[in-house]
Length: 245
Image 1: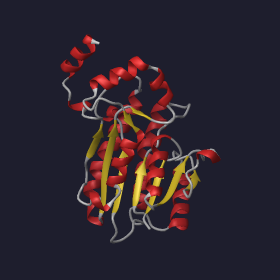
Image 2: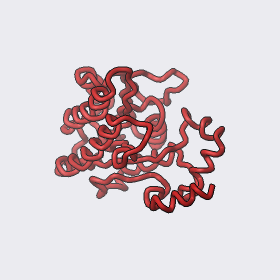
Image 3: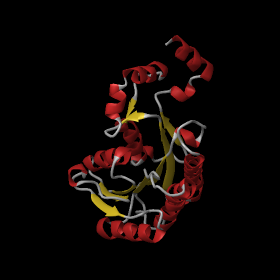
């Protein structure tokens, strides 16, 4: 049985990834700051709590994952800084330092000879600049993108593939009602996205699950956009569409 560790898998996209990979038969370990309410736990998933900004606490949680479920096949980073302290320090600690620590702590604890991979869940703000997120978030996600490239080269010789996934705004349990009740905003997304609909958390989870499988055995160092083709549309074309609405 393959073993996947998900950092930040207690809610949102991480929870959906845990659900999907558990359903296909993986052993799942979730490391997050807080354990989800009992009703929100995914059946059969092992949960470990740790403030991942504290590398000592993170190491203890990772040790627990390995002790209970064995060596790891897949490591998935879905964490997000949501603290009340300094945003810059918090984002760097949670997005970058914790990720680097986990990868380098676990690099010799991946299954030898099996399919192995690392996936960073990034953001469009890792490549572009937009409103609504501070500079720390932009830099954190940009750093994760380059970590994916760096480790793709430097861990490839150990049989560990490393990739990133960049979702566009998507419908998830925590935000679904907001978008469905804002019909004008929903219609806007449906108009500008070439596939004509908003994404769901399952769309991105499917890509992550693919990257964490032998089917992606030669995919390494890529950042896959899950945006329905929106990033391909020229800004002038978008402006004309918006003006006509």
